[in-house]
Amino acid sequence: MASILVVDDDDLVRATVRQMLEGAGHQVLEARNGKEALVSVSRKIVALVVTHTIIHAIDAITTIRELRSHDPNLKIIAMSGGDRQARVDYLDLAKKLGAHQTLPKPFRRDDMLNAVRSALS
Image 1 (cartoon, rainbow, N blue to C red):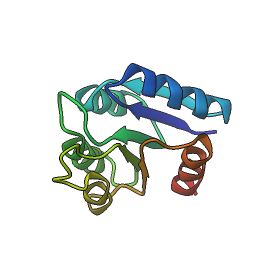
Image 2: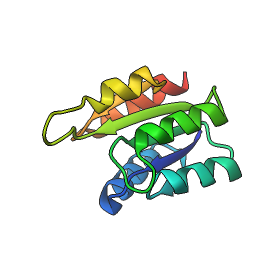
Image 3: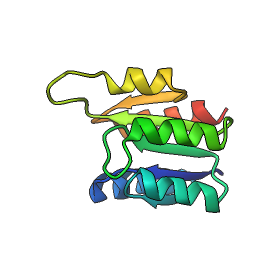
Image 4: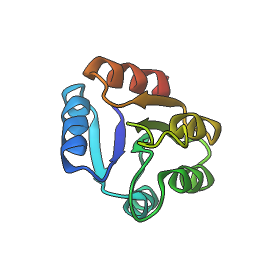
């Protein structure tokens, strides 16, 4: 299966997504923020990045831009619970910047696995 990098500042979310993906046979790497994600991608070959759109250190939108410039063929899934003040639709913005799939939080296991299958196909 695929090597997937999960980027989220919430330990529980990362662990939950890891469990979903590993249960489907994928190899999973983790990053707490955009800075760690960029380091991981530069050191390891990953087929897909699953990133939260609101993360610390480097904003996820900046991270998506950087990832796309590092590897234009890298598949990206953006996930978000939204902006609490509804100022920005981060998932729409992520899609415009090159995310292949988007997932609103909360999502079910099947939603994640379907998004992964679609992005990798």
